[in-house]
Amino acid sequence: MIRVFSSRLQWDSNPNPLSILLGKKRREGAAILDLTESNPTRAGLHYPAAEIIGALADPCVLNHDPQPRGLFSARQAVSEYYARRGVEVPPSRILLTASTSEAYSYLFKLLANPGDEILVPRPSYPLFDYLGAMESVNVRPYPLRYDGSWHIDFSALATAITPRTRALVVVNPNNPTGSFLKRAEWERLQTFGLPILSDEVFSDFALAPDPDRVPTLAGSNGVLIFAMSGLSKVAGLPQMKLGWIVAGGPGHETALEGLEWIADTFLSVSTPIQLALPRILAASGVVEEQIRTQTRANLDHLITQTMGSPCRCLTVEGGWYAALEVPRIHSEEDWVLHLLAQKDVLVQPGFFYDFEAEAFLVLSLLTPPVTFEHGVARILDAMTALT
Image 1 (tube, helix red, strand yellow):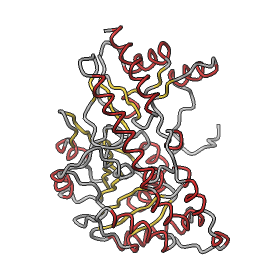
Image 2 (cartoon, one colour):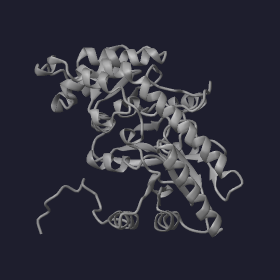
Image 3 (cartoon, rainbow, N blue to C red):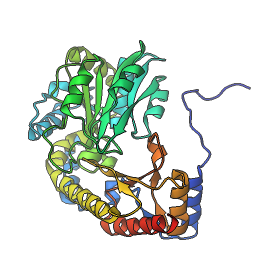
Image 4 (cartoon, helix red, strand yellow):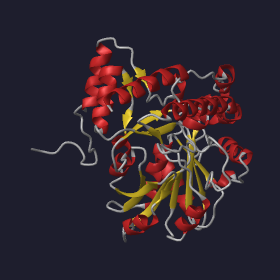
């Protein structure tokens, strides 16, 4: 038989037990308490609608001015965003993309040949295997360990490096652990001499100050770095489809020339959103503060309610998620299916994020508070009844 599709498309179209049960519940009209909601436009937030709509109404959208790195006005807006965070990033070091996922695609193309390796943290967001496969790059994990707080296992990281390792990804703060990179960790990472891809989409959402934290690598110069972020999280606008890469460190000028060549091949970022970017970023603080308030309140509620219960909320420093350790009398899959079947509560199992051990559930702190509180109550009722 002639092979029709590329071997890069390594997807399994068969639904898993959770998606099958969820589909059945929805067809039956069940009122599901969805504690996995990560779409900010569905989180009950108030957006500065007039400002956003007005920003998209610029008549200059009728002109086509293809700039591979992105329009200067848009890159200047990103530069000013970093300036407000106390970091100096000139527009010349910024390249725009349609998303952080596209930024990864560009960087994998830039740094790796087919069969080369990229190191990624574990646990982490379950996207890297797919992104790597699309670029014919092998993704190898390095572990994060938990001992009351999360940290990089540097012994395991050193072992994971091979002659084909081309770069190392940090997610800062990590999704779903919510752990930030610390200064001592950053110093050690630089000793490996590898390019660093720093995914910082959640870096604006720290839950408390910490002087030991490295909030962004955008201003770093010790090694070749690529810091990534975008409107999806910064402004709570995933539908606007704009992200960016900030390059720095030795060789960043040459790296940007390569990225510009790649970007010129695709020219994916639309003119309307680039023109709107200055006004949207200037107004983003309204949504950011709501997200911070909502995630903090939900985390506080989760911590308070789980005290003295069979569950434990792991330490969260930032981001939109919390990991809940639950009794190991059942597997994560069994817990998740039980909660959906018996309590109409949807959560994600830890193995979705490559947690190495059982049993963890992952909850979105972005969930509207009333839904979150009722969902947590049902989770704890189920845990108490079965333990």
